[in-house]
Image (cartoon, rainbow, N blue to C red; front, side, top):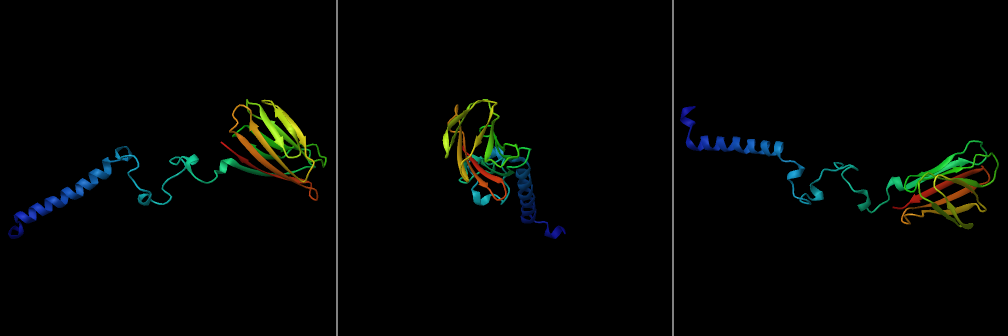
Length: 177
């Protein structure tokens, strides 16, 4: 063994340990705080490594699930069916729960702001904070736009279809802001 213990062998073995130890040191001590902003390209990030906590959803070019809602309800039951709930503006829409076959929806303002309700078949209505109101529909498909009076950017567009054969209503809503 001594015959092979040359200066070159000693130096190369020492370099190997320094190289391996330096990589292990870097892996154990360098974290995200040490990286320069925007210095890691998207191609270097492992697929599915980022979650919603790391991504600012408003910068994404597609719809967030929290902005879309839909629901189905029976018009002839004595219990109101919830069709949509929109935390964006504090709105809840249900059937009226009065067991008749009228095309009636209940709008419940769960916010502290006044909501403005416009619809395709009728005039604009105001819904005070904490109040509810029923609106009769006159067509088989009704479109509503519900907007916060305080913050006009907060709104929900609601399309409801009333099915006379099954006495049901289906609503789909899309919230902004």
